[in-house]
Image 1 (cartoon, helix red, strand yellow):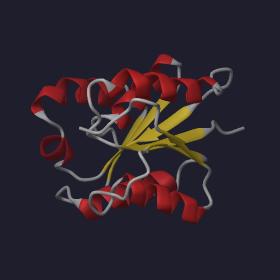
Image 2 (image 1 turned 135 degrees about the vertical axis):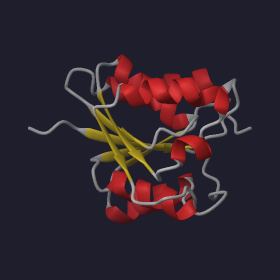
Image 3 (image 1 turned 120 degrees about the vertical axis):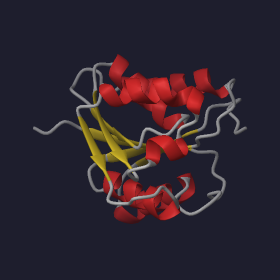
Amino acid sequence: MALPRIGITGHTNLTPASFPLVTDAVRAELTGYARTELAGVTCLARGSDQLFAHALLDLGGTLHVVLPAADYRDHLIAPDDLDEFDALLDRAATVHTMPFPSSGPAAYMAASEHMLARIDSLLAVWDGRPAGGYGGTADVVSAARHRGLPVTVLWPAGAARG
């Protein structure tokens, strides 16, 4: 039997006070899988994706990463987040880099579509508002629903975007 594969999409601009709230919500969702082996797929963006990666790994899951573009690390990851990004990337069982030379909305959405094609369900750390730009959380949720994937929206009380 194949491992259940859970994907993540979510806001990158969570407030610092939201981090423990989102971490607890993600961990609670993933704990239902703790008795079985679990695989998680993420683009490893700051915020929701990295909180998911930590929770998944803490529960003994296997991390799979999809990078949107060759320059993703240097383009999207803030200098103070590089150590955490690199540490999580080092713990990934697989890393797939999309064939885009530059990061941008098309690369982000293509990476999300790649992730959606490889998962059984999606967790969305989402406040329900429209995407701030093409390839944002709302677009990924819409694409997942269009594919018929189960989507669990997590937005704990007190969570906010910065």
